[in-house]
Image (cartoon, rainbow, N blue to C red; front, side, top):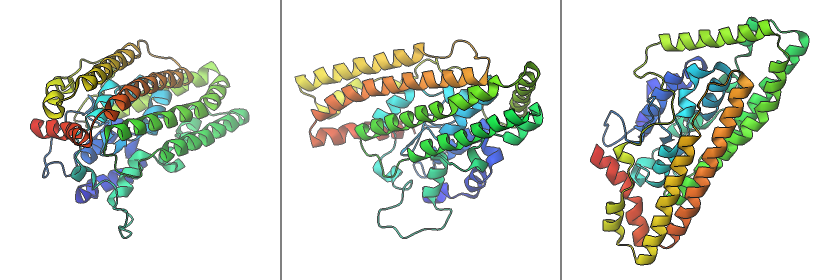
Length: 356
């Protein structure tokens, strides 16, 4: 696992800010990290992979490159929206039935008493995917925007304020990074909630300065900014990619994500009371899936501020869905014995191994 995470290709991609601005490259990096060391070097895709080729869960990390996904769609528009809008109920499901066993996760984070490793050690890879507050990495492409719109002094000041807010928002997301291996479904759902809350706070930080900056632009400057976004989209599509950017988050649930009722029954042998809690959890999960399905983006927002507002609204819905499932899951999990908990946690890795 550590050797795979330290591969030359992955290291080179993570050190290249220009490459990471390409959502297809980010998807390939996330895929490589998600499958690193998987079942003795297996290549291919796992059942929890997104339609654009990326992964919502990379080891213990939920939502790699979160800040890139937010500002790509907000600033550049529909051509860059697939990574953000690809997140939904499937990721909550993968939080409950995570495909990683303990041995799989051990390579993502360092042992507590480990000696300091080289600067490019595997845990640094996970941290870079979790978030980076360096302006060189996550900062808005200020130079490109300035060249396109030729701002006045007032507009340049507003753009600087937006850049500063962007770095602050990235710091919030970076702070919500896993520092330990998440071994249980309750801990994974709690981390999902923490990560989404950090992203909501990041959106709230960027929204006011973005609205201010955009309101200062005249019609010609707005047209230039839109043209720049179109150039970025064409440039990305022109680059080689194994998968197209898929836009919709309203997708049919794959067979792999059907609720494993029979397996839970066979492994846990639940009591009547536990079956009642399990039924409540299944109902909560179905409600969460419906919430996220109906909140999919119907129309393309026209302005960057409107797109960022759409991002915030979607994150709010995701937070509600995670809280709903987490509450019911905690109630169910509390009724299980230690042996039943161990059997439940083995369902995800076992299903992943079976699909392998």
